[in-house]
Image (cartoon, rainbow, N blue to C red; front, side):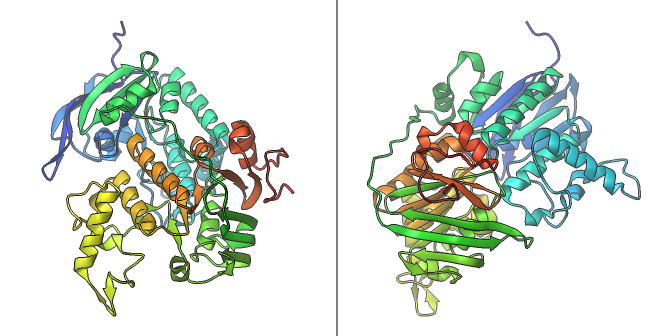
Length: 517
C-alpha cells in the first residue's frame, strides 16, 4: 500500500459558471513518479479542473493539497511557484512577442538588463534535447498552430516544473517525436515528477499512464488502474455508451480530378519559401491525406489552393479551370470549401451568433439574401436545420459561438462547409483536440461526403487517422512533397515518419505524383 503523500490531492472540487456546474465534487490526485491520464468529452470539465489546479480559476468548493500542504492559488504565478506547469490546448502565448520573450514572461528574479544570449542558448539547448525545434527570435503570430504548441511545451520545460499538466501534447508530433516525448515523460516520472496527461488518443493513454480518471458532464465517472482496463471501457465511461472504433470506409473507384496544383510555390508569413514545387491532385470519391510535422508548409499549401495566400509560381486548377491567385469567393462559388485549423481565429467569429456564423459562406446567396438585404428569418431557419443535422449542442442559434465547446465549434464549422455538398473540402486538423464521440462524428461526415462523390483534402498530424481515412497519402517536409503513397496502409508508420523528417523512400506503394520520381 502506497502511504506516501501525493504530489497533488484535489478534494471535492466544485466550480460553477453562470449557473452551470462545470465541476461537481471531484476528487483527483497525482502521485510522485506517475503519469495520471485525465479523460472526458469536450465540455466534461477537464480543462476547468486543471485551470483550477493551475490557478487560473478559484474553486467554489473543495480543497487543494500540494505534497500534503493545503494551498489556495490566487493566480498562475502562485501555481508556478508551487512547481506546477501547464501546456494548454488553446495556448496562453502573447502573439505580438517573440518565442524567447514568451519563455520568460512571469518569471521572478530577472535582471534589469535581460541576458538575451543566455536565454536563447538555453531555449535552443532544450529544444534540441526534446526534438521540438523553434526559432527563439520568431514572433508567435508568425508560427503555425503546431509550432505554437512546441513553444508552449518548451515554456514548461524551460521553467522546470515538478508537476506537469500536458493537454494534448502529441497532436502535432511525428511518431518518432511522440516516442521521444514519451521517453522524456518516463524519465521525468523516474526522477519523481508527477504528470497529468490529457489526451483523446486512447492508445497513448493505455501505453503511457499508470492511472486514468474519467469525467462525464462535470462529475467523476471513475478512476481506474490503466493495467486493469481497456480503451473500449474508457470510451464507454466517457460517453455513457459503447463506442465502435473501426472506420467503415467503402471501396470506391476514384473519379475525375477536382482540385489540382502543379509546381506550386508560396511564401510563408515571414517572407520565406513555405511551399516549394508542390504537385498534388484530389479526385471525386477520394480522401487525399497530407502528413507532415507542423510548420512544413501544409497550411500554406491549403491557403494557396483556396485563394487565401498568393502563389508565387505554379498553378491551381478547379475541375480543369485555372484558378491561380483568384479571390477566395471565386473558389467558394466553384465549390471549394475550407475548414481551417484555427477555429476561433479564422474559421469562426467568436462574438457573432451561431446563426450568423452559419451563413458566412452564403450571405450573398438566395434565399439567405435578397439584393443588398439579409433575410434573417431564412438565416434562423438555415441555422436551426444545420444545428440539428450536425448535432451542434447550443442553447440556441442566437448564442455567441465563443460560448461553445471545441467539439461543437468544429461541428458547426463542418456543417457550414458540408451543408451544400461542395465539390471539394480542405479539412485542416478537423479532429484536433476533440473527444472520442466528436472525432467519430467528424470522420463519419467526411467519409459520407466522399461517398456522395465529393473530394476531401485532409491535413492531420495524427498518422493513425490519416492512414485509416485516406485513399492516398502525400507526405510533406520543408514545403516539398516527399512522395504520394497509393496504399498508405501498406507502408510502415516508421517509414512515413522518416519521410516527414525529410528522407525520400522509394517503394512500390508510391504513386506518380511527388518528388520521388
